[in-house]
Image 1 (cartoon, one colour):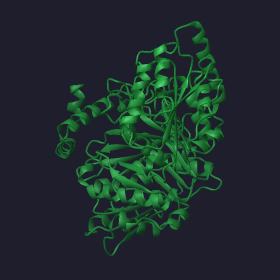
Image 2 (image 1 turned 120 degrees about the vertical axis):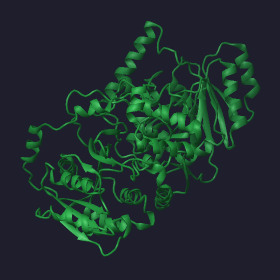
Image 3 (image 1 turned 30 degrees about the vertical axis):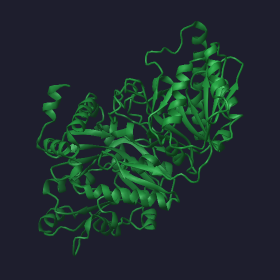
Image 4 (image 1 turned 180 degrees about the vertical axis):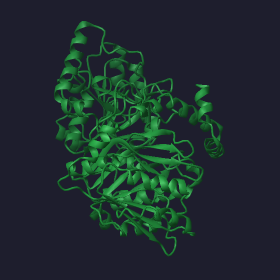
Length: 611
């Protein structure tokens, strides 16, 4: 740990936050979080920020932009006893926008409005600024709704009274609105220290991710919504105060799939002594409201689930209720490795709480007598059936062959070197997989030394695809808790993967042209192309005894085959490899698997994407 970084980070706010965390979670969790904090700090965000600055030429180009039919963006702000400095900086971050077609709607619920009125009054010469003094404080939702009532623009941007917009925020939003016709637009954000103005803790977000949004309001700021949609859903709801923005966003996404993400830092969330940004433990009621908001949203979507807290405030775990007791077919390819297979099977039998399943062992050219002796011992017992694939090894063909014998409504691909940790693993995966829009569910896998082997897959890492957080200790939660949060991804590993039979059949099974590598990635991408979600379920944990040091290939023949599979994937999935994985922000490096920042070579110019 770099002691200089530790000392630099210490101020009265972080010390207070640290003591609160220590009191709430105890010494062990405090030390884990402390190590994570400074591990994340290895990415020098301050240097990255130096490349993320608008030049004067770019600012002028944006100001001179000719708009044929520019959308008017209504920036709505509920003010409540805002310190003068923060109030001025907030207003001036709007008046300083390079995009001119905006209005600023301020609703003031301060108990003593004399100070805020005097400050805001100095800006009212700009006719785009509208100011309303409320008769009484209506709370965060009521005050925001009052500001929304003042708005006449095409889009409404929610803006906190002590935060800052980047100069080009509304320009980028308007450009995206015109190009995509999106109903909801959101941007990346970071935090800024109230005393020094230092930027830190960037939140580089994926494109729209429903399951991540249910786990946490990852969208947060800047959120811009078409005015007609805001009014259709009824604005903010005071019943969820503290998480009113999370509830509002969930109600909005229920009404539209036209959601655009701008992968640029365009919003600064100010951190000071009283802010939630600095001390999340100070607003427990907000997290209780968030939990209710997620549960009510899930019910409105026609699903049944239990929503519980994780050990991290504001982050939730959703457990979907299993409907009925559907039959599961577990497919396990095997060649020799009697003890490995036995360990796998015994962990299923001894630990699993779900019982309605069969196990299909797909035998592939074993040579050891003890292997066949074990087959005779288990075949036909405890739901096991051994089937024989006599051709050469081809992982795709083996699974397709096993599928031809499967009777289950759900298929569970499992490696023979997996052992169960989570007793209710099948119920948890089933609950996810039974959702009408989910095709595949993946698990969290560990090496025997309790480091992560798989926490989902990102397309593009390492050239084609790579697992996330490989080698990170299992107790760590990773960048913005991504290792421990349910979320949608483009792919998961077939070492432990549940598939809805309908999704399997629609995709045509595994591509047998991919004998060894990337067949599960290709399969997931086919399923996703058919409109299904691929869900990473971190609450299903397994050990995977694959060697961490095992090389991909060790002969010229294998190397040629591996290269041909790389070429195949690059040709077949050229679009996503070119555009980037929608579940991974383009500001992250593809050379690492831990959400490390990509080195900037000048101001980032990633375009918004629409999903």
